[in-house]
Image 1 (cartoon, rainbow, N blue to C red):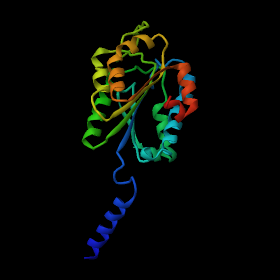
Image 2: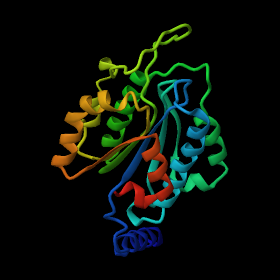
Image 3: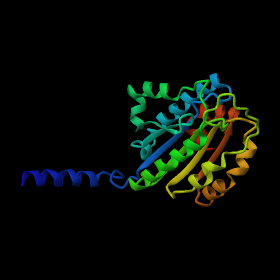
Image 4: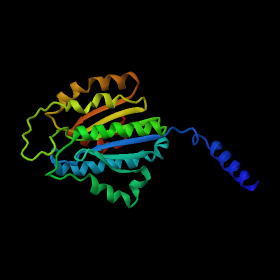
Length: 229
């Protein structure tokens, strides 16, 4: 009897908290370029850390306070880190900074990274996440794997086999898509390619940002204000 009373009391407390029980589950997906194709790599490393500073600021926004965050490596095409926003202030943050550091000899597997995002989005749907925000920090230069001796000419078309538009419009839970650190030669070809995603988000009052290096620096320095512009 006592156990039942305690369980009832705990459940009652949960549902009495304003906005707690009905708060939507929010997830953040970060695709981070850790390859050798990253433009201006030294500066890029500084602003990758600004991305995580931005994530820390999200903790001040009530609906984001319990958000799950996943970090996908574009070089390896797989999820390298999963946690909660609260982990960004813990010892796990140091582990994360090591994970996202670029290496000059790494290929850039954009196809694998976006396909990994597709898998993650499916899992989030099954787990009941109602709001997903996608951030891509990459110069959007794809390489073959292996890439030793590969010649890359810019502008380079997006890797069509990745099915990026289909992935970025695959779930009604996707609320925003933001690209940072776009190589200037890649901006127009990717913007043209992403038109279906842009139109889809616009129709559902979602947010789309596509930022070259100078605009990435400006917006990231603004923190949450820069995201919401």
